[in-house]
Length: 600
Image (cartoon, rainbow, N blue to C red; front, side):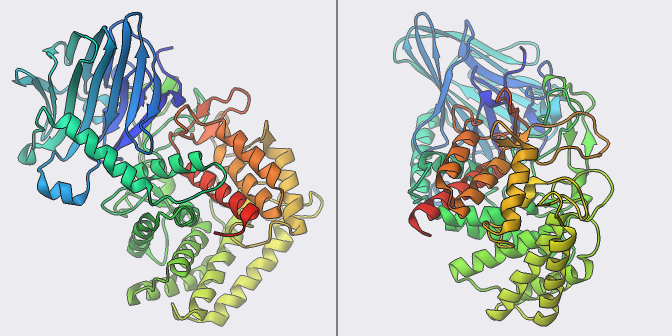
């Protein structure tokens, strides 16, 4: 196979950009200067012309990958007939104090190579900016440095190994004796602001980056079930958080398919409001308070730009223009077309996001003691009034199905959650508004959900009002306190979801939905964690633990979780790694811990 499995990649980054490093030593995905910029290396989506940066034994092969403990520094170890080759990859993470002391490139990626025994090494640096549409002009800057230029952007590769130019690439072949090391430092900048790294920066940057991540992980004080997986999930989420604003992207990739060869290929390099409530809970539950604060501030900034109407997703700066277009020149991962950039779902009407935003803000304020400023108070009041005015409208629903608008049960329930939280905030003196009007509307919504959203013949809440099929999003109702987990309606709904949507202990989001797209999708990993959360809340601790263990089997060797999984083969599917899957793992592990030992 020319394409590696989706799970054969590790993630590195600096909380501004991220790269996927394959187990064969090739960086096959990197967008610069930020997550949603055009790719510089895009072989993940076009093996022939997407571009890549590979380091490995000259004879080839696949190595074993691991992170240096409690860091996001990745190591790939290759076994050869004559020795071991260790490739250490990271994007520097430095404290603000160090950044003030030392001038650094705008973006930087460091690759360190070390041998144990005698190893022949091959390097190929083949950038293809703008999603593979450009072949950069490459020239030698110094005897040990190569510059690749595309317009105003440039990449500067400095190394202490020989580099030769060949057919739009820089290549190198050399031997390392036992204990010998080489470093390759790749920096990005605009012409006007270029900063070149020193060759001896590599080891210094490695030490400082390891220190940074180990200091950061001390904030993650969670002690309980699945502690190792929780810590790795927290580290992954930190990589997916855009440090300048606090927004957390859904995934660092676009268009990895939900079914190999299918067309359900979407751009996930944006921030979804749908995940807001679960994100804030997860971050606070593992004591990442600074990250929870930054994310909540991003959330309030982004929603302020469009309120009282909210958009499904925003970019890392809260911008709303996410025009979707197809990269017709790219073949797609294993032929899965089209490759999409941007996301048209941003323009959909999604009622549930009001509940997630209100619950996120209420959770953050209640658990930190923070108080909203006057502008935020006014914005939340207007948003609550807006929910009263629009809750009877149909919408596209939480899964952003591209078909006609319907009355989705989960969306209606979340509208009630939004108004419930608005009333709680008003009663606490944190916002003003017509609390009685909000209470009456919330009660009316609940009556509708309990009558039209619950099918007594099926004994379950259904995907839509007066519907005949279930939806896994309904597993969130207990976590968001719409109904207790042991309420008879929830117990029977969970049973129906497991029967209709379960396969090998994984859960699909839904079954048949007419959305005009061909092919199906895999099981949605977050839904399995949501089921485990419900079981913990019901007191079935053994079943909750078993389900969490099963979902974790979908992780790769680095404990990174995909969006979806094939229940029959355990093959990873969808954009990778997926923030919502890691958030759902945190929610489930904390629910199990709380049920076992009492709330933290």
